[in-house]
Length: 122
Image (cartoon, rainbow, N blue to C red):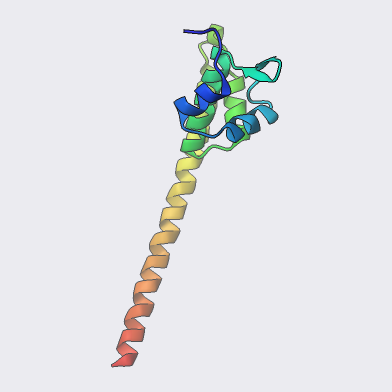
């Protein structure tokens, strides 16, 4: 295995576009080395990309992901990082539950309106 990853190898591995990787680089989330025009991503960059994509799947913003990833400190047991992640997840769960409540209310309103319309047609 090589000491670095190319943008092409990362796009294939993670199923994302090169444009996405360049975007994360532009935002300062990834810092590849350059060899001419080729980007060389380290194992740490690959791990950061994996965590960024996981955060995205969880509904975290890039800023939230950056904050959590930047707290990585194995000498402290990562307790601060873990706590921030749990808090972000709790906020996301709360937001999704609120959305669910709003959807349930909307569905009920739609069903009631449909029933009224059908009743008035008769």
